[in-house]
Image (tube, rainbow, N blue to C red; front, top):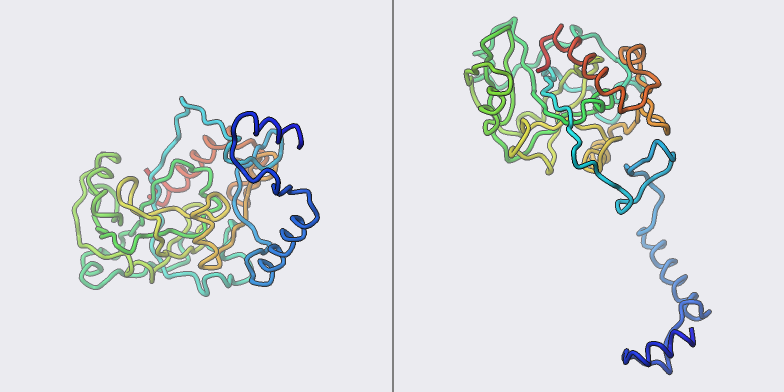
Length: 296
């Protein structure tokens, strides 16, 4: 420290060098401990959980500065439909512990579709499905989905497609882009605001279990569909939504980056590295969703 002090003086660094503090001095250390005690008493320090960047190769958490992004990486994106239904009973208080996990909890035909506001519901045929459309660049996280989020200030349009018995619900501002993406002309049936949707629920496109439709501040209509697939185990914003609504943050991926899916996903995707499982999980979603007319 004396040598460092002399170097600073030679460089002309200004400071009270005759009364400089050292972090290893007992007085300084006791002061730090006093601050730590005050923070503990005020509840500023607590033990909790949060999503972290993870390295399957080294099996350890990574700091933001340690991440290196592959510039030429191309993400596989998908539009996926979650059929509207009654909301799950007691959000955050799952029945039997399975409601808000990635375990299958219900068949695709066991939940009756909930009608939208009367002005829109009257225009929907009894055999038509109403699909809340999400858009994601991480389809491999779909098994961990616990909710679909809408924006409180976003207008949503219910539109009928030209093929099959199905109607799509998505942000009005994204209707044209979605129509082009699926190469299907859409006929608007009515509009609804985000808060109205928060009283509904959706059916998971793979397991069929019910997940809530919630409001979240991070949802926008500048891209995607204006409805966000939410998996608390796979993102900071998703995790915050999960905390606010007591959703499960169960993660169906182990420390080696291998998929540990339950039931429908198990045979097709289990124990495979995520970089290999994405294509198979996409195919699984496609097969399951096409049988229920859920996905593009």
